[in-house]
Image (tube, rainbow, N blue to C red; front, side, top):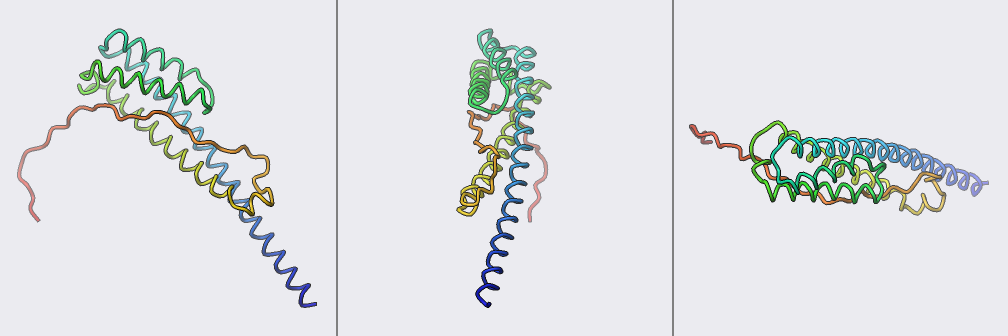
Length: 183
């Protein structure tokens, strides 16, 4: 009789643990979906800003054409698969080419340069947040209990989003001169 009670308690604890883990995994998958939507929105914004930036500042013609083409391709590419990674890497390379050929377009304070920097920074943060969320899901999915009991169900296996990500040149902020405060 004692063995039966012990077996029921063990089964109940395993079932409770499995239920808790399945709920956690479900919440993590929802976070991945939300992070993917946020990343997609920020990448679309970056593509739009890159196209607008190329049209509103004075860039060399070949750099402007490459930037416009890459931005258009990125804006038209759906999802977060390999095609999107290639398109976003092309936008980054076109922005770096534009920064190399016309650095004054990035370093001269202007609304277009500010918006471009903001969009690039937000896309970088969104990508990091998405990849961190994917890492969390994969850590839980790699648990033996999750694999053995198939707690992930039919949820798709999330994948990291990799793209070239470089910091764009910015305008130098003047250092304020004045009295220094000593501790």
